[in-house]
Image (tube, rainbow over all chains, first blue to last red; front, side):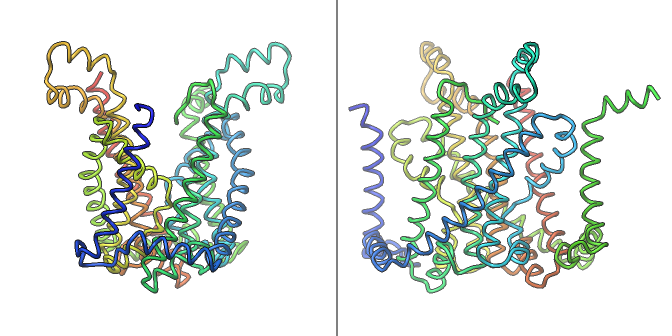
Length: 254
Length: 257
């Protein structure tokens, strides 16, 4: 019974919420605005799915996200490694990096649109910017947190820089790196939706903007649910991956 | 020359850091002056400085800054007022946590901007929708941190107090709340940054004043000096408000120990 407590209380709460929501408009509890109803949202969702209207934008969005995110990994991890390993570079670039990191990457959307073009270019760029910084910073922190005793141990047995890197630094810095990657996923997804809503009519964000402009609340909520599920699946996937990598390690929070 | 080497070794971090920043700015200026890239598209530090000066001189800066700060304060304040009690309830009471958990996690993993069109439909274009978006951005962080803070209090302490016949209400105000305070304040600090992003994004989408509006307005006019000036002001606000809370945090830590 205890084991299922979380599940049934949570389920019950969601159910009550849905019932209240369903009843709110017919009973006139909400007069000011169209909040739709779960049944209408479900219907809208089925229609969007059956007509296939939602799939093409979803594919476009996923493509943009993946390109930007993979680029962030390809650039972010090596840069993080260099900054974490060599004190000179970290001292040189840390303030610059922090200044760029505190800048809300979503706010430069109008610049990205002009630089990289509406659609694919701007979205890939904003996903990249959103994801790259946490990856760089957490990777660097991970490299720095490795106990120098291990580095010295490898050295004293005649290990080269490459041995140090492969046997000590890389395995040691994986957990924080994974944290950075998970943060990057969330920020990248957010950037993707913002970019599509701001500038293009493509992708899932573009579709949200479209239905928003025509005030079709039910379809809008159905699409928000799609984006939510997308976010949930990605974040959960990362969390699992992180848990798997961290098995038996103490977590180093940054 | 020994002293110079000495000085360098002592202050190498700030020295190299400043060097990096200055070098980046110079590179930017040179790239623009020598037209390595179109100066209209990349702007330059001097153009940004001029834009910032003009913005301040005309007084528009103070209007935009005031608008954004007002939205930030209202959204952040409201999310703290709602979020902290919610987080405390979730940390203190298991059934409350189980009931609210699905909603919190849903909001945590959703790219929250997708709610924006909904806010426009419900609240109309303008300040209210922007505040709602920033509120949403900020409250999730506050709830999660507060809950974690309340939860992580050493159970030994609680049992100890219980065995001295402490009443629940005393327990709550004398142990739980002070114990969770650090986590709550850290949550507020993170939430403030998120609220600022919410404000800027909301203004970017639709507004007629504010820092985000300034960005999208001049972005459309290809006057990127003004865009960067606005970004600069946003970074200053972000750093200043965050530092303020950090100072408070440092105080708390020294008071705790």
